[in-house]
Length: 383
Ligand SMILES: Nc1ncnc2c1ncn2[C@@H]1O[C@H](COP(=O)(O)OP(=O)(O)O)[C@@H](O)[C@H]1O
Ligand SMILES: [Mg+2]
Image (cartoon, rainbow, N blue to C red; front, side):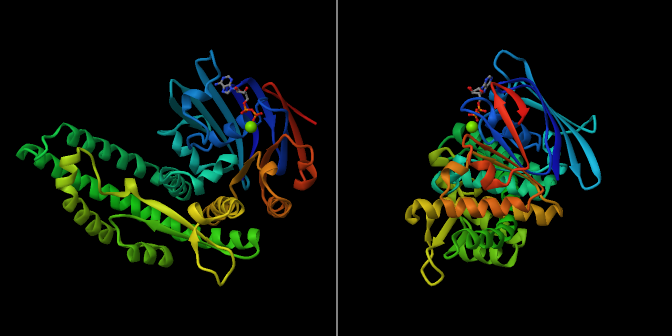
């Protein structure tokens, strides 16, 4: 798939801009703080997911009331018009001029994979970043599941509010209400975890293959880490493609009932997928032991692992949709050594549409870019 026509109104530092984009690799050049990343961000937002860079309020141009994005997206023979309005932190979306219930529905038409300098935090950062990565993969894979994480967050918030205000031993009335929330939590938590495990099962072979390509030797491993789900159940689910939701419910129910006294004591929810993590392991060569990339990986291994996860995401979405997503690469060239640059150049050559930003002139050759755009102070021109 590709986005052909893009229009930005009051988005970041763009007052108004119209950009025509073609297939293959497009390079977006420009000095610092001109609007290169914002252009990629605009494409990404049209895919319905939250910006990788900041909250929706920060997307509206300073002094403006709302930001508007319009895109014409080509999928095979079809051309689809997408519109997104961001106003007071709220999103409204149109597909072919018809309002849709949630901006997330845009994901059904367009998927973009964003890779920027911050992506290293997938490896080095907190578990929340990895959970978000996984939960967004769930949506990209099956847009209908966009509500799973929201439903989980909603039930968790309600339960936490109750726990905060409850007496430490819990009155009879509190305990009854808590039972109701726990039941909802078990249901939402098992569904969310099931979807995460299914995704991880698809991501692992794809990311592992990409890791092998980039690193030429060494191996990547991914495993689901959870305090309530026995490790072997998670491992089995990842290697076999999934697990029965009823099994997940049993484990979660047990953990939640065991945690009840401590949860009342502490006034917060302790057991559940809100604390789970994905551990990323690497080994330097086939025979060596796999070690946690976050604590033991070299800077180079961590970078390769982050790149492999995103390339794996790309492959996984391609497989699921039967069409390639749009690849957005923000300022990655300066971070890569010659070997990884070459790999990226070769990988990008086979993709439907890649939009790459760089402040370096050398990127044109490395990429084999078919089009070059220059951004100066929120305006875009073809060079
Ligand atoms: N909501 C906003 N309103 C106006 N300007 C903004 C907004 N958000 C960011 N900017 C400005 O937009 C400019 C371009 O940012 P960015 O796209 O990150 O630049 P680049 O990637 O080219 O270095 C920066 O000067 C930034 O301060
Ligand atoms: Mg930038």
